[in-house]
Image (cartoon, rainbow, N blue to C red; front, top):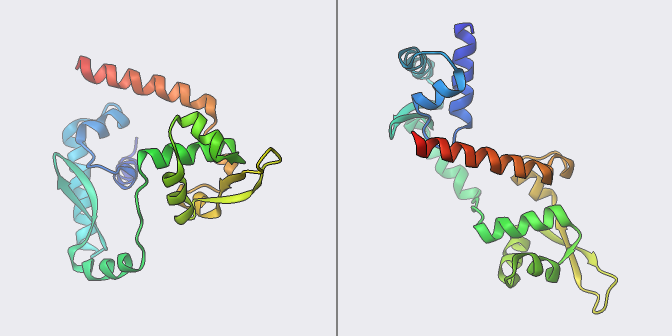
Amino acid sequence: MPEDNVKSVIEALLFASDKPLTIEQARNVLGNLEASEIRGVLEQLKAEYEESNRGIRITEIAGGFQMTTAPAFAVFLKKLFKQRHVDRLSKPGLETLAIVAYKQPVTKLEIELLRNVNVDGVLSNLLDKNLVRISGRKKAPGRPYVFGTTKQFLEYFGLKSLEELPRMEDFSSLVEKTEETDDAKRAA
């Protein structure tokens, strides 16, 4: 692979990784490159970002490398995040949101039957965050509300439409791959 491509791949890995990218992780992705070659490319990228005075820096953190913002621009980031507060979703929130996304339109009772817990608080939180909306009423006794996802849901997860959601069948293969990876890590 040409050196420019290696540099681009490593840059993409750094950008996409939510945790510091280790040289070993980069080696696993890139194949037959030596650790010293990968470190060299990382150092090159690091120098390029600093020399061109970009807002992003590559920092060595916790045994890996990560893209961070340049300290000089912290004041601007504080202003941005004062205006925009992004909450992470809890595990129950994600589970409930997944049920709504895949089963919509769905009633509160149907969600509770799938989760085996009361979802009043979780559903209220998702409504407050505008990730879920009341999309109508079910033609059933009591005419319960049915819930669906919102445009904000698509934005939050970076989807163009609901058709981009992973298919349910893909999850079983993803679980198998994760289990294989976990087994391989334990064996190492």
